[in-house]
Each structure stands twice: as structure tokens, then as C-alpha cells.
Length: 80
Image (cartoon, rainbow, N blue to C red; front, top):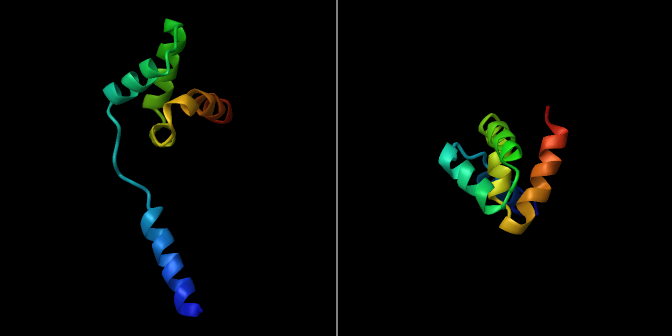
């Protein structure tokens, strides 16, 4: 049982390791265009926010397109 727990912990640490990959600014822009934000000022504000918050970008890119905007609003309201 102890060996199984150790293996599970090892698996978790290996699969949930923080990635050093950074999305480019053009990746961020394309993602915002894909979610179809119509207001250009809002689009610029979202872009500026995401360029300064790479962890938020990683969270958003991990979601299906249809869930990104809802998650993004949540991220923006909890991060100054």
C-alpha cells in the first residue's frame, strides 16, 4: 500500500509539473480573436492583461474554446 501511494504521488508530481512554455503575444491575440470579442477597447484591455499574466494564459489555453471567455472573466475579477 505504501509503495502504491508513493507511485501515485510520483505520478502526480510528474504530470502536474509547472511548464516553462510561454505562449507568444500573437498566440494570445489569436486566442482573443477566436473567442469573438467585438469591442476593440475591451479586446486591447484583455490583451494587455494576458500579456502581463502568463499563468492566466496557460489556464485559458488549457480549456475548450467555448469555456475560455467565462473563465477569463473570472480570472480578471480575481486578479488586480
